Image 1 (spheres, rainbow, N blue to C red):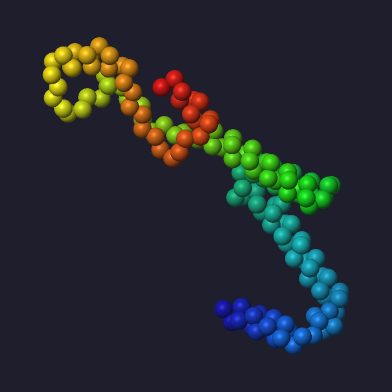
Image 2: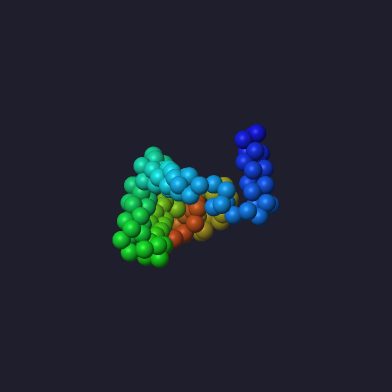
Length: 148
């Protein structure tokens, strides 16, 4: 906690003094700090991220970094947005939204009905479907459950 307070105080004092930081600190020191920060972030996102990002997400990240190196930042952002849309569509279409599926033959509510209604339900009860859903419906999950 004391390190954070000291960092804030030092940063505030340098900003309040009005002196350009380039005049106070030598340029090789600032350049080496910037390079060390860049190397650490690159290591974090290219090597350490494989532990908490799944394979498609890691492939998307790697493709974005390669695109940034080859074509520039704008192409990398566009590629990342397209990959994110594609991956979210793929993941949501594979999600299971069906919690349960019953017909009137397998589920009998505790209600008394006249005999003619009970006979009708015995004959046509398979046409009545009770579908319980969880989460939300998406195009891929709807198309899988369309026979119901």
